[in-house]
Image (tube, rainbow, N blue to C red):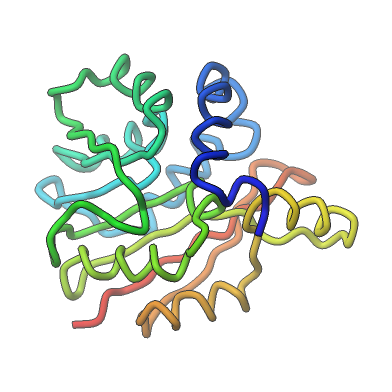
Length: 206
């Protein structure tokens, strides 16, 4: 388990990263990649959409171009404080402080559950994916974006020491273990040589 797959360490990490997150993030996960991922979804304005690990609201901002309201959840109060500055606390984003492995929502609440840049910090990703499936309506969609496993053995060792990186085979294992039957993976990249993202779209069983 990487050092940042610890919830307390991750919160401390984001206490400082939140100050520069919006400056650094586009080098890894930019608007084009975000919008490409959103286009993989079939969302309607009235759909109930949850953004898990919403952070400062980068994905939330993109999702609001397609739906009327987004629910945003994050465990970092420092990240959320930046999101409040963008959207306010009582606008068309409804914020929650919470844990991806124990989501504070009832079964079958959302049409779409989205998470980008969060799974790599989950100590128990299968548990969190099970939670995503639980709160999504039958026939709904779960979209998860995480860091694709590096090809270089050196970078693999560094990656493993920090957080969760995974390839398509490991994604298959996690989503199957969480009870998903139909899903597909897409590799996204900001520019040649930059870190790759693995984006998985999963259908919630009827």
